[in-house]
Length: 72
Image (cartoon, rainbow, N blue to C red; front, side, top):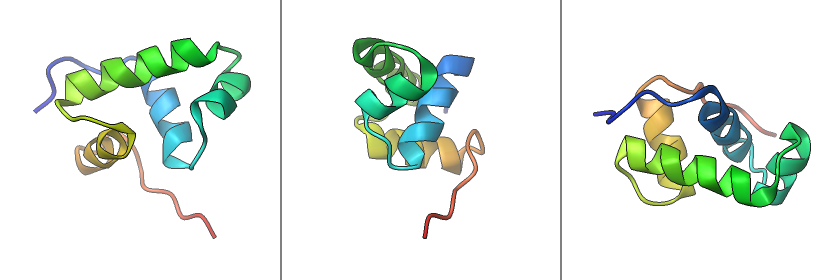
């Protein structure tokens, strides 16, 4: 169950994490600071009631907030 809707930035950060990007890489792509990316990821984790980046991505996919990506 989601505590609150995820923001656009939280979803963007999760999308890049789901593609294997680090916080630094995500920050560079989105034009943010690394600490801002981590802030958005922490907020998303709290809203999804999970701990950790991988659990957050998995929960977002499970809830249909993100589409799983194939990386070869």
